[in-house]
Length: 162
Length: 162
DNA sequence: CTATTGCGGACATATAGCATCCGGATTAAA
DNA sequence: TTTAATCCGGATGCTATATGTCCGCAATAG
Image 1: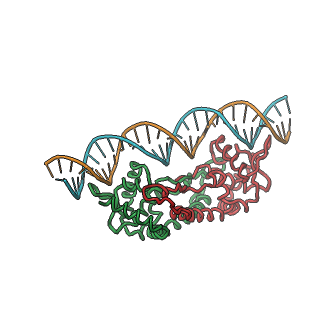
Image 2: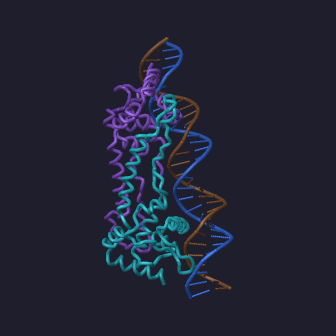
Image 3: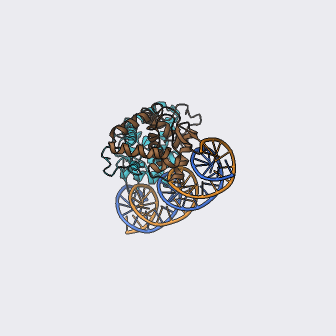
């Protein structure tokens, strides 16, 4: 059970976007360059984020991607859902309804116990992810950055916006 | 992010084993037949459970698999760990340490915020899975079964043990 | 008009999941 | 002692998913 690397890519990209002034964005190329990632693939992931309404795209020269909502209102779950899709990792295929011991009128209205347990677990996971916002993460990253790093970042961003 | 179907297979198999008298087991073939699953693949999964110490194997004629501990002491997490491995779904590859804005002495001793958030979420998921035991699930399944189904089950099991 | 940028699809490759089969070892029972 | 049942580990093949690239089209700023 592995999560797509695209989640890490886009999560970091969104934290970067959250550090920008409200309404300002960056093209996919810049977002890829910032973490030395494959540009074409990053572009593909950003399109998924746009479809999911996490970011807004601006086409044409000088365009790019910017957050669709305030960083406070975008959670890690929003990103996971956009990239991975919202389907649960555990997919019950109801094997309990197969085999030599299933009764004809088999009362399978009640959900499978195993299925229910995994649903509870995944719900706990989602709740935790929903509780973390881009604002939280961006603030923490900024707090830990050295003055030197801050300056480098500002310089790079201004270069991209120019 | 999808979980292996083997988890569903073995979880159901273990619930069945939990319903058996203490110390009694069933061969892999029977466990597969009970839910109409591919015998060879079920056998492979049961080997993984045995390696992980969830079940004990008994070789030779009349052998098979039985639970290695009391149903109360085996959790859904034990099964997931045996089949899927214990690695987290989110694998941080530290892309924050790449790119044009990393400072030479980059202080990356503190873990990445994104990584930390996913670790918390997966921990909540594991805690939930650890809180569900085979005893819980077997009891619930037994409670919901009709007398007819109970009889069919008893008959099938005695046939397999004969 | 041109350069930049996002959009969606087609395509190619790599990795993981699904499933089977086989030879060897072990053991109960005929 | 022979036979049948059973687990074990590895080799193998197939399929689905993930990863990654490329292209033509549309939109837009200068």
